[in-house]
Length: 152
Image 1: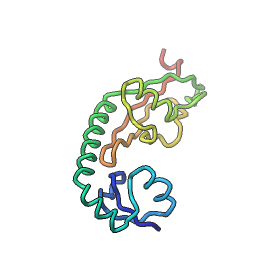
Image 2: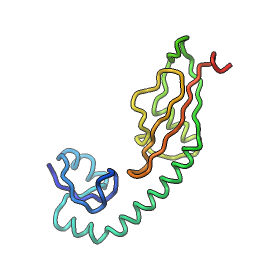
Image 3: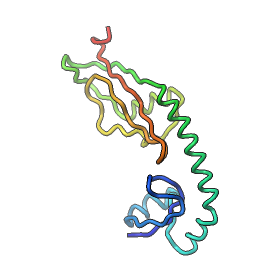
Image 4: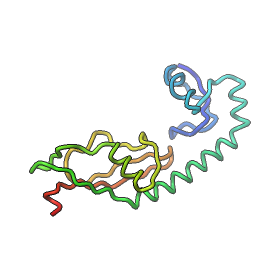
């Protein structure tokens, strides 16, 4: 385990400036290269404490932007026609990429990894897909999958 000091809020229970223990690979391959954390040396902890106010201000701005995006997403409804069998099973599926493209077309710019679809949608019906925009801001997108036969 490696101790790191957190520079950005990205998990609900990790505050900016807190020192947490994580697996070595997680720290080395993700947290430190992406700038979300630094190794918890005495110097880095002191440096983070002096920068904490500006880091918190930046996080508040990110949260405000996420709330604006969440309001926009809540107003949208994604309706798509996909050919399906009689029992409602689709000949294709709806994936994260389809949702990402839909949001981009509606001028909602988010990271693809924010969309929490789980498994691809493979049957007709109505669905709600969670989207995590910030550790404290989530929203959901309503999706309706229709078969060309049922929509006429």
